[in-house]
Length: 166
Image (tube, rainbow, N blue to C red; front, side, top):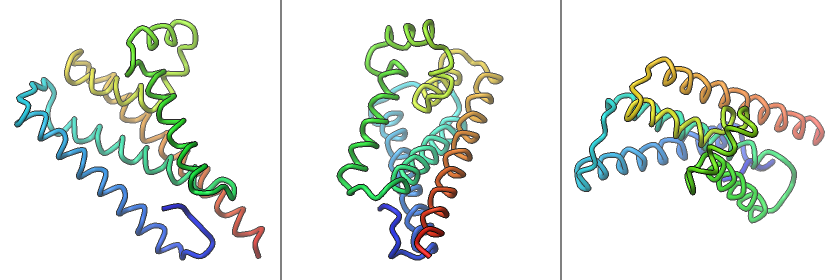
């Protein structure tokens, strides 16, 4: 659901909260399914995994808010932009091929430090493989800071559009 001039702010915030809670519930179901039905072993604590999932859901909804708040593009264009962003960040994070992540880390190390998909992936590695609580904490902080920045930019864009329409 994109932000439009016909919605009230309460409608928009309610929709955003609905999408966040829906995504979070689906991700929790996925983790439970992987752990108990597929019998996958996770080394990290469930609480930390849920924190990563919550941060990932907040980032996803925040990015959706930002994309929907920019320009007067059609919904199809905005969906395409969002898909392009998510696919690009996933590829750069090495979720398609791990050699891509290593190449990006060597050539442009800052890219994956600011890439939400790479940070989320790294946070899962921190609790399930590396057992590195400091790196995990830095990943979670990075995700929530990125979320705050994205929401701040969205707020400025929406406010500017509303001011221009007066």
